Image (cartoon, rainbow, N blue to C red; front, side, top):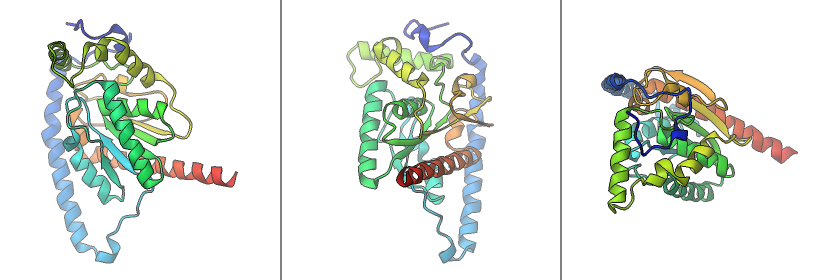
Length: 278
């Protein structure tokens, strides 16, 4: 049953909610987390067997900020933080403790965070966003290409934000009701059906500016959102085999994130070189 709180434009024709039973696929999170643990043990053994002087990874120039999904906080991406740092990336947290507030407010908070990193590091930032975090990343890439050098989205339904599992709709309904009751800091009706929702959706469909790398990682096994809504035609598409939640911890997915970040950082560096020699 469709929720009355969600605007119809958030689920364009051609996109559907995952079947109610699709959420059972998310049970593979246990396997995906176990896969990360096994990788970590193997990496630790390799590190101990490697001479200290040879352990350092080459530093990647662009800083990277990781943005959590709906109802999640920075802690859900801590394993990815650790993996990326081991690969030579300088990572930052978004300072989002629970992604349940107004989308525009979250975007403004993230924009301020990016500005501080750019001032500190003197270079643009790459954003890795999981689910809703990827949609925030795409909107910022459209509005502030001076701050963003590239984005990597993980299971982010940019083309149809409302093409998600009915359980997620129920969670949104609860937040809206609590907001109506006067609880501050939660998504309101404006965020899912009003001007706030429209602005966020329009930004998620706007062209990504030249000079901003864009990789969209998706999985046909996604039990939370319609995977087709995650394949932005303007992005480099990367298909993985993982659950929606498991994308944040599966080392195979993190490998794809690492590859995308390195590729986009190289493209950003080449762009800077061309501008300096022009």
